[in-house]
Structure formats: C-alpha cells, structure tokens
Image 1 (spheres, helix red, strand yellow):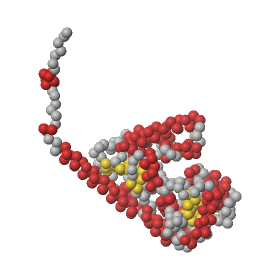
Image 2 (cartoon, rainbow, N blue to C red; image 1 turned 135 degrees about the vertical axis):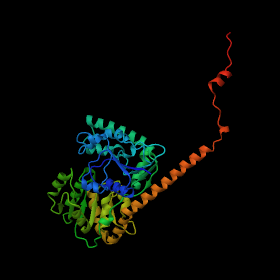
Image 3 (cartoon, rainbow, N blue to C red; image 1 turned 90 degrees about the vertical axis):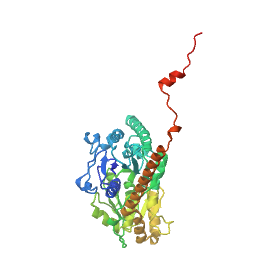
Image 4 (cartoon, rainbow, N blue to C red; image 1 turned 30 degrees about the vertical axis):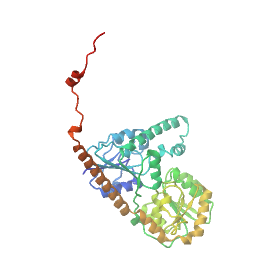
Length: 412
C-alpha cells in the first residue's frame, strides 16, 4: 500500500508540525507533500529527514518569508500535486492541504487543525488586525477570502473522513462543511516535561507575540498588580507594545526568545501559567500541566477541553470569561484563593491524556478501521456487480432494429 501525507507548508516547526512528525513516525514509509518546504536541517530531523515534494510556489520570489502573500494561488497549487498512485492519503490541514485531488478508489483522511480561520468566522478579526478593514486593500482581501471559502467548502467533498483536533474544531467543521468528524487530540511531548511540586513565587507565560495571543494585555494586567511577579518568554510583532507597558512595571520581566531549556525551567517553577489566546487546541497549557503547573486561561476554545476548572473534582486551573485586564486580574485573585485545591499531581495526570503515545495509538487504530471498512465496501460493490443477471439487463437497440420499427408517415 502506498501512502501520501500532505501538509500545508513547511517553514517552522510548531504545533501542526508536531502532528506531522507523529504521522511520519506512525507511517515512516509514506511520501511527504507540501505547498512549500523551507525547513531548517534541525527542524527536518524531527520529521525523520523527509523532504517534501512541493508545488510551483516553492520557486516564486520570497516564497520562504512572504509565503502568505501567495495564499490566493495555493488552492490551484495544491491541486497540481499528483497523488493518483497512492492508496491512502492523509492530510494535515489548517489551510489548503485537504484540497488535494483524489479518486474514488483512494481513501482520504484529513486531520484538521482548523478550517481556514481567516476565511471563515475569524475573517473580520484578521482583517482588523492586518489593518485591512476598509479601503481598496480591504475590498480585494474580502473578495479573495470569499473565493477561498467557496473552494474550501467544495473540496470538503473530496475527504472521506475528517478528524478534528478538538471538539471546538469539530463544531467548526460541522458549521463550515456540514460534515461530522472524529476528535483525536494532537500529541503533546509530556515526556519532555517533568513535574515540579515546589513552586516559586511568580507567574509565567510564553508565546509568539502576535495580536491574537494578547500578550500585551497580560503585561498590562500584571502592571496593575505590582505585588505579583510575571516572567514572559517570546518574541514577535507585539514585543514593542509589551515593552512599552513593562517599562513602568518592575515586577514584569520580558526575556524575549529563549531556548527550550530556559522555557522549560521557568514553566516548571512557576506558581501558575497565564494564557490569554483563543486557541483551537493550545499546546502550551498542556505542557504547563505536565510540569505540575496550574493554568489561568481565557475560557474559550480548545483550552476548555485541556484544563479542568474549579468545578471539576480534580481542578488544574481557573478560567476567565473575557480577554480584558479586569477579567484576568479577577481570575488571578480567584486562583490564589483556591490554589490549595489544585495539586501538581492532578495537573500532571490531566496532561497525560494528551501524550504522543496516545495520539499515535488512536490515529493508527482509526486509519486501520477505515481502511478495512473501505476494502470491505469495495469488495461488496464488486460482488454485487457480478450478481447482475444478463437476462435482467434491457437489450440495446441497434440502428437496424430502430429503423425497422419506424412507421413511415404518408403525406397528405
């Protein structure tokens, strides 16, 4: 059996690429396909050294750094990948990977991180953050995203089975494609984090500093709580805004980008991990719990499935209802009042529900069951076709028979 794994694009090693790494670990013989592939040698090692077969976008100017600009071309690009020789196609998709062309004798299973966020329910948010809410650029962007939505919905018909990375994304799949999905949570390297029961007196957060992560809001909240210390790791477009707020907050430490060992050490020792994004799943809160560190999170998205709130018998964190400074401050106060109820052991046990071993087992079982069902359905169809009796098939009228039956009309 020939297997193809299709990924959107390979530029950095982040959450979606961790899923890809596990898929390759399950099926090391599979061939890899992607719109572009610019991974570093260090990141590629995580994928078993595999190099993807890419599209024409790989050769376009500045495709490595400005690949987002080629989004309008990606539907056409992904459809040019020739997968006709493969029996099983597994796509890892948050943009266009699920749109590959396949035939009726091929099984296509799509692991969806999210339907294209900026084309569906988050369109207005993304346009606002990109300063394209109005003007000519805004009109062009809306037109492109309208086309992307139509293409995205149409190509959903080419997928035999959808797997969602959370129930939150499963609801998006149902809303966007009118299709059901099976939830298999993505893999988290819980073995790479060890539990630390004795905590130090500071809060911790780590993330890319992009608008939807709301990192400056976290800084602003702690600036208003001078008796509580915050350590922040991460870099990105919002860094300057965070620095400006932290300039008047000596209790806030911005470390910028740090290697994994530094991030891990701060996460293990922190009394709480602060999370402000609305994520499809959210790996960082699970990693924090693997360290025995409770989570204070914005209560929307996948985090509601990965963190146990105070209403749970074994709570692992606290939720706050709004992405505002006041809401976060209130959540910190609630957390400190209830901190004795949250144990490091409960956090670690909850994190283990999302381990790499669990993901690989569930994915393998799901695909094998679907392959078996697909083969049985094909064999049943072939069997039924051989049972059709020739006598039950209506004879075909040839031209001579037809002409013999025509009665000439006499002229009046």
